[in-house]
Amino acid sequence: MTIELLVDFKEFWPKLRADLQTARQSVLVQTFAFEGDSVGQDLAAALLSSPAQRKQILADSFTRVVLSDHFRFWPANLLDEGLKREARDTALMISRLQRGGITIKYTNPYGVAPRKLLSRNHKKLIVIGEDIAYVGGINFSEHNADWHDMMFRIEDREAVAFLRQDFLETWQGRDSHQHGQFDGLEILSADGRNNRASFQRVVDLIDEAERSIFVQSPYITFPFYERLRAATRRGVAVTIITPAENNWRLFANYARLESARSEIDLRLFQGGMSHLKAMLIDDEYLIAGSSNFDYLSYRIHQELIAVITRPSVIADFRERVVIADLANSKPAPCDAGAISKQWLSWKTRLLDAAIEVLT
Image (cartoon, rainbow, N blue to C red; front, side, top):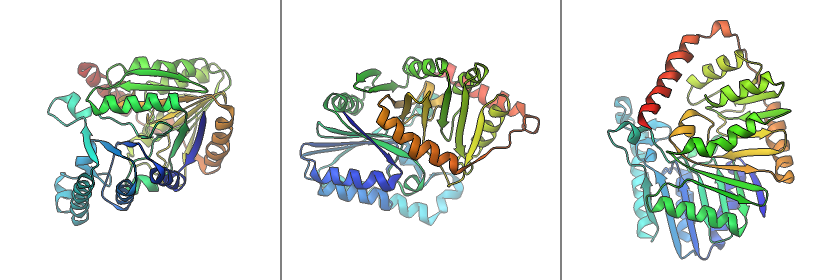
């Protein structure tokens, strides 16, 4: 088993591009967003030139209505020439891929039912042949490539077979609820309906923490904050890094309020948008993958979660993510009196009630 941490797109893309050029059997790509900008076009070119016999792409339907982090059909965006040009470029890219023999499917089509609107396949997964897979949080678009994030490159036939089967299940329209156990690696596949069972492993690890919990995520919400707050009451040192410049600004207020209500040490990442999501517990368990540790992931999104226990990978993560990102973060002002408790009360609990109805 080999697990390699790749921090940011600049480390991830050269590795993936090289693997695509040596692939012979198959290349399976699953992404949340796939846009016809320079990043998407580079992936398309690499796939078209790859000698692999079988090439497939799965993208969530989210990417058909949201480009460059903007809802295409919002009235103000309908006149945005840049957005219209990217939509045309994306359509042309998809046509070129299909003509080149690459099959493309979109997961989770939108519908009028609330579940059809909220349920997204949030996985990021690439499987190359029988020996290599990538999991993590990076999408194929320029703005995602500019964000701070990470992927893991895995070489292990059993783990890759598990992830390959997960991709193929999704390809056939069957969301997968599975748990795989490998050498120094667990993989949890959440199907969007039984997520609480999948995430119970994460909750248990938080509840069993004895010394420290480090969390980095842009959108962390309940129920994870509740468990982290309980950990601080047991004397566990809990540190959270979230971006100072968040593409969803409401989460910055949420993080300040939750941290003000507890002994959580909240830090604001200063290096632009951080999309990286990971949790390190007692320096023994590294939890990573596609999940943001938010309520939608916990209940209704399809996600891939990895629990890594290999000491060498954890040491690398500590050096290149924990230490580096703490050095690039500032303590957040968390005055509970200055933050509306009503904001937490009605917005978050309304979402809780709505998803209870859906599921």
